[in-house]
Image: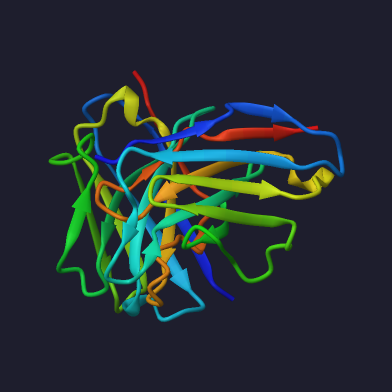
Length: 112
Length: 120
């Protein structure tokens, strides 16, 4: 099974400042046949289901603000919120869809 | 508008059974892989199971293999999760999720979830 880890567990960032979340997979989630990293980021606000933010490690889902960006390849990935807004307070999860069983990171709580 | 509406959750005793349903609308259900993901109270997300568009291929997390069965009825646009031999550790919100056919391998729509509580 691919184990996903995230750091930090939580972080507090001032409004307007940058937030950076790291995600690491125990095995590469890069597919050489498709040239894609099957790494996805989700945002979950209290009392709501998760929302898709980023897929293929760096492609923003339609409608997601451009202050959210993803980077990385292979086993190391980063989600960056360039300028934290109040509505970004949430838990962020990374997720690998490279192999079954699909697995999620433990989540990173972002607050200000 | 894509909608996924789960139902069937509730309180059940350890060892009991429950069947969850997910009514899908607003998209071509028969073309999509579908998944169940669960979240225990105050905890993270855990993938449970998936099923391919025609229902011929399924996968499960080890923690539920042999106890849970995923299925679908494409004529009724409905996804199911039959849960048997339930344990306290199965207590969670269960989300029904769409996995689009476009190759993104991402969960682009989630239902609101249905709560399952296993307790005596």
